Length: 242
Ligand code: PXP
Image 1: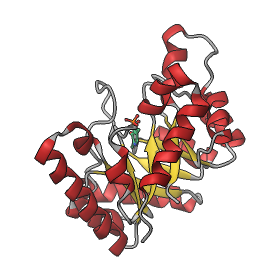
Image 2: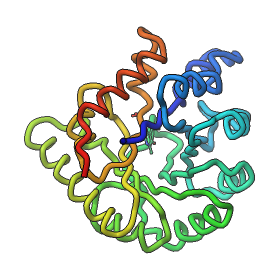
Image 3: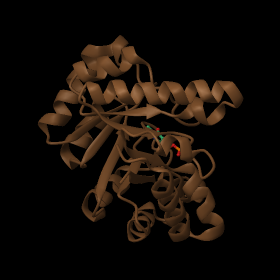
Image 4: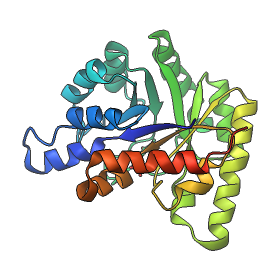
């Protein structure tokens, strides 16, 4: 069964719009879990624009499934991760001016830094995943620096249409095969929604997806429970067992 990780950053985005204590992403995470989420993902950004340190600390205690902390390789954030010890950390590139994560981590071009951070996290008992573009060079570099998983960036696939989308899907399929051959668990994420999830869920090597915006956006109209359950149903419908 493909694990569904729900990213609750955007519950915190709404909270921060008014600097109120609600809606609380900690409560949202619990509701996601009650409705079938296999994991909760949060991104602690340098500017704390949505998730903050309190959220990370509380969720490390309250999340009963797997807490996946997305983070850049900055020392301050790595220190927090090593102290809080979430089940999993996903290293992502981060630029202050971006609206959301753009492009995967350049593991091949910054192997020493990524290896050092991955090593610190692993020494703290944390499962390490790297968010990368589905490019063979980046996947092989991820295995070399000691990652246990790669999260393949699905953004190009999600934004493309027609033959460009078919090519992007082919890149994800090949990337998943290369990752699995290199002993890496295969995760996918970014831009996935109720309409484009099917072909990705059908990738045989896929073990997990991380989905945020589409689920939280739908939850405004349906509530979190139905939004999570509908995505769970789609994953089950399209999954192809190896
Ligand atoms: N995976 C990673 C590494 C991300 O940075 C994000 C966005 O925070 C997601 C998954 C979720 O993307 P989306 O919100 O588009 O579903």
